[in-house]
Length: 138
Image 1 (cartoon, rainbow, N blue to C red):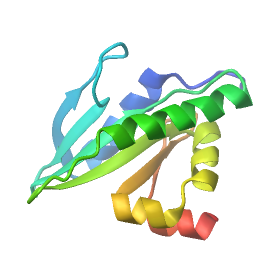
Image 2 (cartoon, helix red, strand yellow; image 1 turned 90 degrees about the vertical axis):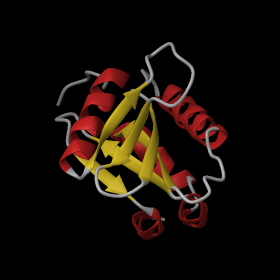
Image 3 (tube, one colour; image 1 turned 180 degrees about the vertical axis):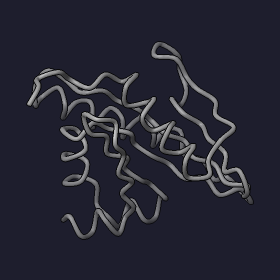
């Protein structure tokens, strides 16, 4: 097992590949130092959008906790009443940070806000968790 931490860029690339394989496209990206959402994707067949906040892995458990709280705050501030277009929201997180999210995000909140957690492992595999998976994990 390696101690190499997953970078934000690695997590971002992994999620983009996953979304591309699952019907999402028309990507818009925020840079590491830009304001705004990190990934905005539109479904290729439906008028639906995914706004995703991406975080890398910290060098300590405390840093991972901070990354989780910060990412949640960022995505919540991007939420709007979207009218006729359905918008989904996501947090793309390395496994170490996603464990915190799975424990701390109430599934009822995830359901109401259409919030998903994308869990990225060291190989770039992505697991998409809906409120249902969060409920089962709690």
